[in-house]
Amino acid sequence: MRGGTVHRRMGPPHRRALGVRKCTVRMSVPPLVPTSYHREVQSALRVHESGLWSWYASDKFGAEQAERVRLELLKATYRLDGAAHTDLHQAAVEVAQSLEIEVPVTFYQGGADGSMNAGLCFVPGEAHIVLTGPVLSRLDASELRALLGHELAHYRLWTEDDGSYRVADALVEAVASHPSAPASWVQLALRQRRYTEVYADRGSLVASGGDLDAAIRCLLKVSAGIEMPDAASYLRQVDEVVEKSSDPSRSDSHPELFLRAWAMKKWLSDGKDADALLVNRVQGPRTLETLDLLGQLDLTAQTRLLIVRFLRLPGLRTESIIAHARQFFPDLDLDAREPEVDGNIPESASNYFGYVLLDLATADPDLADEGLAAGLSCADECGFGESFEKLARKELRLTIANVTDLRRRWPGIQDHLAKIVEERS
Image (cartoon, rainbow, N blue to C red; front, top):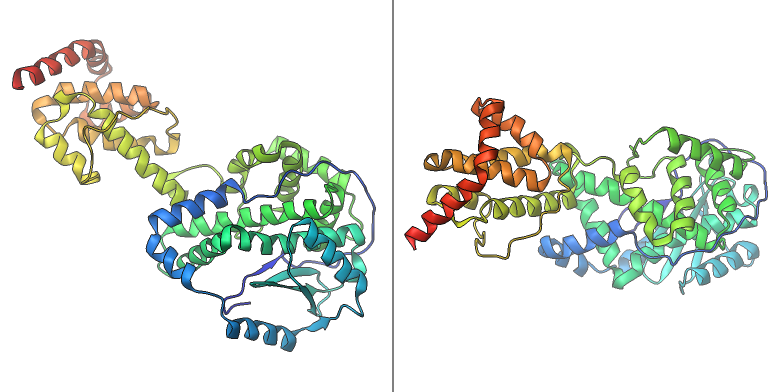
């Protein structure tokens, strides 16, 4: 649903789901907090997109807009009143309490094709949940709590930190949906959607008191159409998949079922450390082609670090080299404290960093050997020395003997550069 609402669904509609299989394996539930990715996105947007942030933060959800949402729901669905659906409403009260949400919850029934689903329509101070298909007749009590926990977790996320996560979501989706949106913003939207579903799945576990089996059964019934799912059996299947494959999610919104089940299990067992385990699965390998906005910002910071690191020797700070460096960063502070080298430059980005460093090393023809020797040393320290050496040999037509000689002479070259600076001062 559009018009300022946030409409999140448990999962894509599929076949019908029948049957009940009760499992009561429970685990302790960690505190429900926004994922590391949500926090990083919000922080980055506040700083680097402050104008857009202010715009979307000021776009308050007005009374007229909220009234339109309610009216559209009444037009398109059947409202499930509390008097006629006491168990549903009582479950909602209990789930809301478990998620520390104090807002009225209104339910609606929609959809007539037999597929099951659920979605939240966001209105500040009100939670509107649309049930699609035979949810009430196919889910047992524990599975229903898990479903409600998932949907109400969306509400909790959008109201965390004075609604800043809703602002971030609205900003990202608006930019990413534009026809000319940069690829980095599209990637940002894809990953934020996936993490939002991961967060909502954690809400399922909070609502069910750590009953992983109930949450898995709910997931399989609603999202996969399994009539009588065996949660324990599916979790063994998930372990087998994860052991044999490292494939990341390729979904536009909801991660694949096995990843969602695996993520829930990991959260219960690893708590706050689970986010680090999700990176490769939810975000995928870090390549230049798939960088999101956060990755681009980090790449920019790494590039600045690399340039400052190369220029740590005053003897390299000639007019030609500094002019080239300032093409990257006009505000480059040559006297800034030398940053630590993290040594974690991703392999996929080594060619990019290699060319940045090679251009710096060859920017001054009067320091040909000195610049290249400094570049080799810098690349070694930053963890991509082998890649840089291959690049330099290819582009400058050097032999292995040439490179070996430069590495051997580097200590003497440093002394030579230091003397040049001393003579000039």
